[in-house]
Image (cartoon, rainbow, N blue to C red):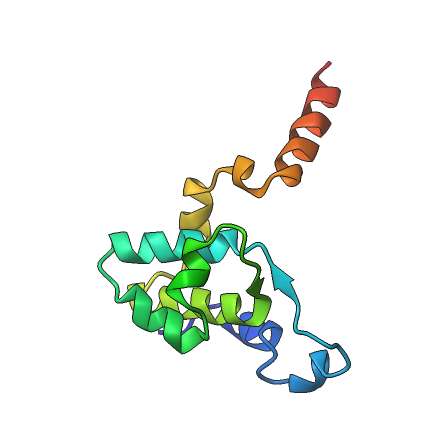
Length: 120
């Protein structure tokens, strides 16, 4: 099944343009909260999450370590694999329903402060 946003994610992962990061010493990394959320979601839905991690170039140890930064391209690959395995075209939406902004630290406080200022 084709995912509407899959082409964009495929390009964002660097598959069509591998030179996008060639000038950088290291591929971009991020906190990986979405990948960790996708991992627990896929486990709860009965998918072989460890196999999907391996295919994406991630490890169980990285998912278990909340301080580990994960390569962005690998996270995107993993999200695509999970969406495909679960046949879930709305995976991002379903993950967002479970997401707790407090897990990403400063971003949560910036958003809370912003909304608090507009209300008062």
